[in-house]
Image 1 (tube, rainbow, N blue to C red):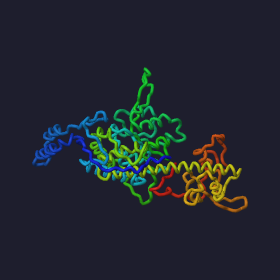
Image 2 (cartoon, rainbow, N blue to C red):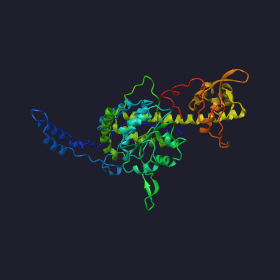
Image 3 (tube, rainbow, N blue to C red):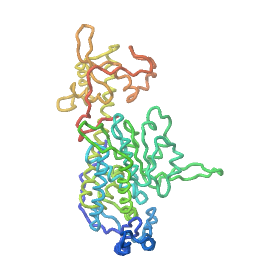
Length: 487
């Protein structure tokens, strides 16, 4: 697989920001007058009680609380708005830097992300959602994990309270999504996405096509609509976060910033998410983000920041890097470092997935060659695999594939060696054929063979195979900084 990363770097440069609208107060040019009026309002307080005069406050509120007019899309933005440049802003950069720092801290308070880079990516993704109408690409956020209890739904809870115009759903149809996406699209938040795209979800190609098309602007979906059956173009452009167990379809993962969640370790603590105090805090951050970024939608329409990656990875990460450049400070460097690290991690993940699928096919071939044997010693299986000159196993690692490598590659499929007693009465670590039946059917089905409906010996219909003896490792190989398990 082609590695989209490249050593390209960029130097910080300046950009002049337009005035930032303050919700309820208008543009900053009125801020000084507003403060003076508030001071004078305070001076009219009743001398005996210290309570401001109601009539005075009502009059001043009518004069000062003119709502800011902000554009809903890049087309409605001010034509003379300056363009954003790579490297961030020098005017007002401190405010954006502090705001992203506060948002990053708040997200990290309620959920444990797998790495600092992932926390940075989620922070920038949330901020980018407030600039959707001005962006050229709408990156997906794929929040995946190997099991339940990894914090996927909790992360969506936090996103719901901080992103622009959230639309939360557990299961939905393409018709609904077509009709809620418009000129100022919502941010789609889809929980339990594995129920939409999983093996039992049925035909969801329309929804998958919508999510794929919505990654880029001007990719409408055409449908016959209305009593007159007129061809109608439905917008698809909208940012979306999808959470589920196991990887999402490849076409969606390729357009997503992938957050591979893990269960918290005993020492990792978070603040309980409670509506009475969590939601007001997050809403305050959401309002600050809107006050900062909504007026800047017009400035990012033609922005072309220097990216450390190429092709679709650059399209996906560009909105996040744009936000980081607007914030300035340490955020441009932090965003590009996260982009490079997480993109390379997914490249390695894809290569590992392909390698594991090749291993399953080769092991099936070995069992076929051995006739009716129900189990093979680990060492015997390794010897046959390494002898294949066209396979990568003789050169795997530093000295070729060994028993540890084999167990590590098969772990994600729920397959591990177990003690097995052979015909001669000797006992050894071995792999049983029935351990591979489910993985073969899912990851490398053989179209030349009819699908078998018979149950392996010792199993009853409706019950999964018994786990092998011994215990499985609780953490992914490589730790938080290494490749994550593929599901």
